Image (cartoon, rainbow over the protein chains, first blue to last red):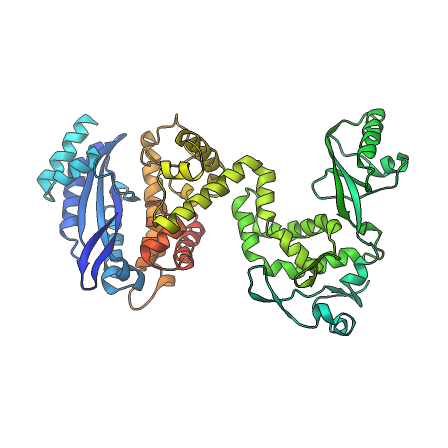
Length: 136
Length: 386
């Protein structure tokens, strides 16, 4: 949720929001491709996969979107506004897979460990999701 | 009917210069404050009205009954001089001369037995102040209550907010009539002769002092004394820890501060959470939550992960929040996006930060963070998603 980055004013805290994408088992391959494509085209703010797992009959991919440093966020800096706009765009483009805010997973959780190993490439994410779908 | 006017009576300055001639006072916290004005009804000051029912010291007998009972008939049969007055809680109260409380209790108990009235929890409080305010003629006392409520109501916003926040089924619209009843209930114990560091106490000052504990008393009446005391002690311990350690206390630290065990603390937290959850904003998070979630609305037997609709509901809620964050209302500068609102809402509900923690996290005032959250909640609520 929060980490420290070095900026011009020293170490600053960063605000991250977690976004959960939850495709059903039937549409996992298409969802994996869409998620990878959306992440690759998200240039306004850093987006990373922080969790991959399954809940019920859904495969859940958790994305962490960096909104900005706390000073950027509270002052409404352009970079933070762009990041918020990008969150809105992510939600719009992934709307077929019920995107929703979620807490970022515990770094020690299985989902987080899978997420950390998934590189942001279509095949890697798709493979992980398909494996989970097969066991879901 | 005399008209109701509220304000300082300038005529009184010549009558009682020691009490209201100078408007400034030194408060209990050693700050300079302004004296609360005496209420005026028509041409009469509150002192003149209350002088019609002088303060006495009485013994009070206080009890409950299953069915409403006629205290007038009871008093007519008592061999003692007794007075009664209706309180809004519906319980029975009778005041007798000081020293006659125990005797009166036995007489009342006997009368109730003779008349088939079942009484509960009858008790005597000795030497309590009492005014027989019902003996004040011409509805003057009712108008004094109204004037006092009118003066107090706009000046007690924080107290009213706490009452609404703490108690289920109480809304903002209820607080004015509730305050009138509260003032009415406590009026009979007003002792205008008590002298403090700032002279004698006037009626509105006395009521303001009573109102400060009104939310706590009401919550105790609704949920039980133990539960509310635990709630207060936990909040106090967390605030103390935030002030000294700059973080929330761990379970063991909190248990140490509350001088109890961790297992007992957990039991108390669960009980308090069930009460606090009645109006907890976290309830907008539906569906899938972490295993360590503190949500109290979902029963343990319900597997929300299997609930297919929860994903859609969460998605709808998220979309509504983003629409609010991106709405023109939040426009600051050229872009409509409001990063502060998004961060505040996310960290409050999904980061599980309290208002103080959120303010510290974002390095803003608590009211700034709360306003950002509230604006989004209001818009999301107006959209009918909640």
